[in-house]
Amino acid sequence: VMIPPLALIFLPIGMVVHAIAANEERGYLVPLLALPLARRSVMAGATASAVIAQMIAIAAIVVSAMIASLVVGAGLGFSDILASSLATFPLGTLAAGIAAVVAGATARRGLATSIAAAAIFAMYLIEVLSSFSGLFHDIRWISVFNYYNEWLGGGIAWPAFAVILAISALLMVV
Image 1 (spheres, rainbow, N blue to C red):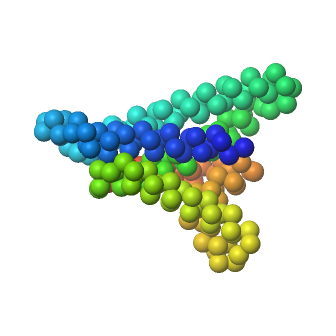
Image 2 (cartoon, rainbow, N blue to C red; image 1 turned 30 degrees about the horizontal axis):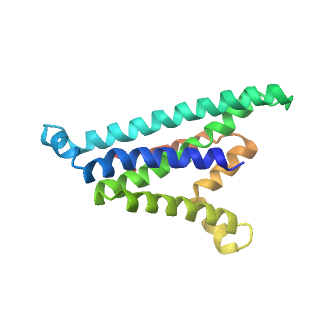
């Protein structure tokens, strides 16, 4: 059940880190940044490609889940599959935003990947521990998985969805 969300989290992390930190480590960004082009534009292009790839992956998951549902007779509706797949989008964009900040600041792909993954893991841990501890229950609003679980259970709350995407976009262009 957690494989598609995990894949959709690490796909944009990998793309952003590769586009920024890996290419800077190899010296590929030096000629590009020597042009009259703002670094912010390069970051925006890298993150936009990661977002597009994530949307393509979500579409592939929707199509494959629909086919699987039809083959096994699970009776899942298109809107349910689309909503559950689309709910993963803010997870990936937030992870990409965190990776973009670290990759842009340090130009180190291992560090950027690790920090982005650790931040997502910490949010997941907060969500899990919120079931057992009042402290974590009180701070679970900072976990994107809190909203993800709500979206899976009762449909996407578009204001929260939009806020997470706005935070992600801000992180991607900082």
